[in-house]
Length: 143
Image (cartoon, rainbow, N blue to C red; front, side, top):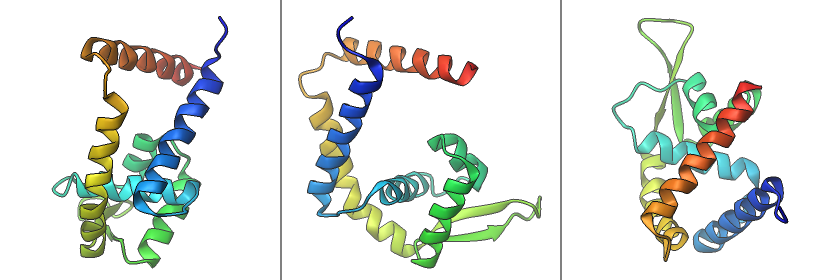
């Protein structure tokens, strides 16, 4: 096989985030990418009880990485953390009005990007793509 998964994944990742940066006019690096994804995730699930561990699992990052991103988002006024009523050890993460307003601006970019990514791709091919990605992820998680 001439192509390698690691190189192709890196290429795809870079192309996607460069396009998103151009669309949004931002110059944010990796931390900003994660923060944007956290805001989108929280705003798309306004009625769910989401804690830091949920976000770590969703974005496949370590606790320290997530804690740093959440600290920055909280300091900037995009999220608030409250202690769970049923388990004092858990901090529930909620988007603020500022995050909701920022997400409203990001939503169009995300939708446009998804349309751009899937343009000309047969839905059956897309299903195969997701099936293969799931298998690769499962292989990595099993080790």
